[in-house]
Structures are given as C-alpha cells and as structure tokens.
Image (cartoon, rainbow, N blue to C red):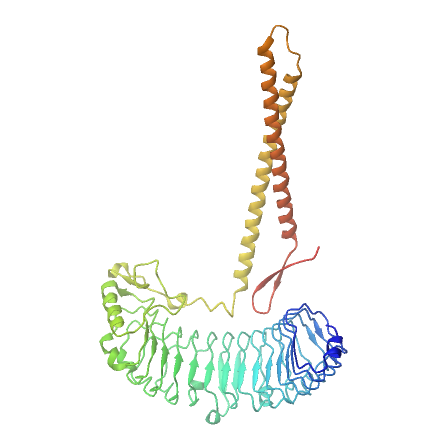
Length: 510
C-alpha cells in the first residue's frame, strides 16, 4: 500500500481498501496518517502484522483486518494505535496471541477473533482492556476459558464462544448475553447468580444432561438449551425465570410436561418443545403462558391435541408447529381448518419439518389409517445440526471425492471416444488409400465414356472421405486437449482443512 497516499492527503480520516489484494504493510506506510480514524483492510492477502506497522495512527479508533491470511500478530503491532476502540481480526489463521498484544489498548470495547485457530488464550491477554464490552471467539479450538480470563473484563457484556471445544463454562455476573452453542459443555456454573445481569443464554448443541444450575438466573428472557439430552424437567426448573419470553427446549428428550412446570412464565411469547417424546400433550399444561405467540410441537409423534381450548388459552397465538407427528389425515384436515379460521399459521418454519413426499395436508404428514402411520425418531429427525456453523468435514471430503470420481469417469469416457475416433479414422485412411489406388489405375481401352464416369465418381468419394477424416482429426485433438487440461487441474487440487470444519480447494500457480 503506497505511503504517498497520506503524504498527498494528510487530512484523510477514512480509508477503505477492502479486497484490494494488499499483501504487505510496513512501518512507514501510515507515518503521515495523523488524522486517520477508520481503516478497513479486510479481504486482502496480509499474512503478518509486524511491530510498529501502525506508527502514525495516533487517532485510529476502528481497525478491520478480517478475512486475510494473518497467521501472526507481533507483540508491538498495535502499540501505535492507543485510541483503538473496535478491532476485527476474524477469519484469519491465528494459532496464538502474545499476552502483551493488547496491553496498550485501554479503550477497546469491541474485539472479534472469530474463525481463527486459537487453542489457548492467556489469562492476562485483556488485563488492561477493562472497557471491553463485546468479545467474539466463535469458530476456534478453545478447550478452556479460565476464570481469571473473564474476571479481568469487568464491563464485558456479550461473549460469543460458539463452535469451540469447551467442556465447562463459568458465567460471570457482568455478562448480559452469552452464546455458547456447538461445544462439548457438560456443566455450566453461574457465579453470583443473585447478582447476574444475564438475560440471553444460548447453550444449544452441547452435552448437558441437566439445567438445574441455571435455574436461579432470574433475569433470563431468552433461554436456548435445545439439542441437549436433558430429559425430564423438575417442576422448579423455571420457577424463578419469570421474565422468560423465548424458551427453546427442542430435542431435549422430554417425555412429559407436568402441570405447574410453566406456572410462572406469563410473559412467554415463544415456546419450542418440538422433536421430543411427547406422545400426548394436554394443552392446559400451558395455561399460565397466555401471552404465547408461537408454539412448536413438531416431531413428537402426537396423535391428537385438545385444540378447542387454544383460542381461549392463547388469544395472541399466530403460529402452531404441527410437522412430523402422526396425525390421522381426517383429523389433521379438521385441525388445519380450525387454525385457518383462527388465523393461526401452520406452514413449516423449519427446513427439516416438511414431508411433502408423503401423504400430507398443507405439507404436514398424516396417515389415512393406523397401519400406515410412520413414527418419527426425534434424534434422527433433527440430525441436521445446522450446517451454517458446524459443517461436517467428512461430508465435505466425500463430496470432493465424489466430484473427483465423476471427473475420472469423464476421463474414461473421453478416452473411449478417442479410441472410437481413431478406429474410424483408420478405416477412413484404408478406404481413402484404396480409392486413391483405383483413381491412379490407367483406364482400359474400350471402356469409353463409362470408364471416365467411374473415375470421376471415385475422385468424388475420395474428397468426401478426406473431409470426414479432417473433421475427425480436429475433433480428436479438441477432446484430447480438454482431457489433458482436466488432468492438469486435477493434479493441482490441494485439500486444506479449515478451522470451521470445512474443506477449501486451492489451485497452485503453474
């Protein structure tokens, strides 16, 4: 990046060079960038941030170097930007960070280290960043987040640690939002739960078998513990969570819902109890949740529900999830008509719910008789695990192998086609040679006009065969060239496993 840019425009405050193929920045580049406040260098080819490269950026408050190839940030790379408030280092190749990297950045409020390859974070990494309010660590390989690490951040409000390898997690009282889905968490421990400010907690897709430890978090308004093998819930589980507005219990192996379980959830607007083992459901269990707007009961192998009470119990209900149950078609038709009259939507809101390939009513599976019913296994029905954030590497590799196999099959077809063309050409050469010999023979005396016509006909045949031969040779060369090109590309494909459980394909420069 040319340093003359700031020599010519010393008053420049905003600079956006995103996606400009910048490969290197030296310590003199920003020497005259005295007024620069916002710098966006995302989507370039940077591989390292060296010491003192932001020398001159005394007023820089926002720095975005995301989506580069940065594998190392030197200890003093950021010391010359003491007013930095917002830092984005996401989508890079960082394995570790020097514990003194942020020591001079006392005004930091937002840091994103998402989608790197970090395995360990030093306890004192943010020891001087007491103003930090938002920290994004998702998509790394962290196994532990120490108590001291979080204690050093007294004003931290939002912590994102999704898609890591955490096995346990302590929740400091200063947090207001915690996103910890797609880990291996077996236990969660709120510290000073009576002083906790947490109102949004997401723990889906972990290894929890109990949520009793979080039952004292009275300030929660959003709780997502879906895709955990929690099992039966104690009647006191939600007793203190009177502020809940959104509760997700999808695929938590619930088999029954007892009267009184939701007795304090008068503010609840969204409840998801889909893909559990609720063979029967008494709607009156939810009597206290009169503010419900969306209710998901999909995937429970339900045969019927007492839907006549719905308008009275839930006057604000706008959506009812009915998919993947075992309704009788006649019963389901009546139920859907009832919902339509009450202006309650029943169309699927989940990509894995619709069963349009089976007998259905508005996409909702049903059976005409008991013998035809298909009973769904909840654990199989929800095996999607949201591939937006947790794509399976083996599936991706299998896809690439399938593509490679397809390519090899195309090569085989090309070779067979070439052999066929060669055989045709060989036959044409033989025929052409025979015609040529016939044309060169001397015309016998006495043949007269008939012999002359025969010779002319032979020449005409020879010309046709010559044209066919030229076309075949040209086509053969074209096909062979394509086959060779495909082989060359095939050899240059490199497989690289990324930190987000995906597989990328790269081409080497020839």
